[in-house]
Length: 448
Image 1 (cartoon, rainbow, N blue to C red):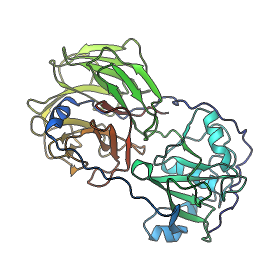
Image 2 (image 1 turned 90 degrees about the vertical axis):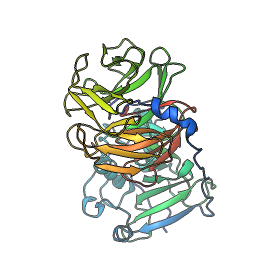
Image 3 (image 1 turned 30 degrees about the vertical axis):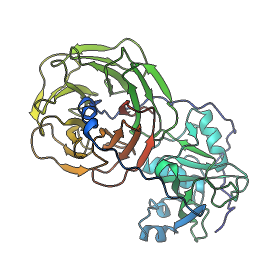
Image 4 (image 1 turned 135 degrees about the horizontal axis):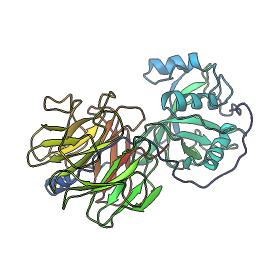
């Protein structure tokens, strides 16, 4: 394996300045309901989830595959870089360069907009991105850029960048794809890097993780009902909140939605009188819209029912299993009324097929089973699967960007989020703790 192959700068240069970390500008929101009451009520009867700690590895890293062809035949993607790498992405030098490969994957696969500044050599990316408001930290997430500073063990003076493809439980390991560092003729490989090894071990844990904002990528947050406050995080990782603010008086139900169709907003539902209070920004302030819709004590919903003009509201009656949805941000008669599933479920909203407007669904906290439907009507579910243990609180969001929604579960007993992008049974793509226990989870596209 070649440890020190140069990862050259792009076309031009970039000043190496480190800026303060902050939440980037807000972007479009993939709405999810804050429908928690039914699930929380059932937690008392649900057994505790089994927890297994991550296995301890005996090696710092292991190669998963080498070469574009070899990785593809082993089930690891190379994203057609063999036929696309002759182009320059983000003003990087084309060809067998770590910087150009990462820029290609970030822009063409994950949909990250091109930076309006020069990133420089691989070892300069973190400082350059942070200086322009991009979140840079030591917490890995799928789709983030792993960065090694110049002079890091085996990397040479220019540093190195790679793409984080998978994160192990409790950040115990990461899988990365990288270019211009393998012994393969085309320089490509996937590697698993285990946490906890000295910085003199090959391949060492990255110095930084760069979370470029991705169009349509949802992230998470939580509402503290006891304080009436909201905390949001701009990446699918644990650690700290990027922004916090007071939503309203305690005891409300928090809502996230893109009411204007242009930028994400926040709001709450008052179960005492059935009123919605919606803001067009992610901060405290006077609501832009206040209205009553439906009787008190319902479970509120937000979603883009028509796929046009931003998110609207609705409610689910847990006593009858009936959805009531309205195409206007105002009181009045619902535009859709239908039953889907038995009473007492936890409703869910998401764009399951990536087409048109949102669909609906429900989660059965007794079994941990999801049933999702693409149409706003009664009928058979289009997706049926179990994800996570019973007794969780469900979420929906586009965790990797794009139009299609995935699902997730939040465990209020531990504060852990488990998220999956595929609408099927299987392991979580993201698993992390964020915030104290017993919160009400939120999901939305906070980043721009």
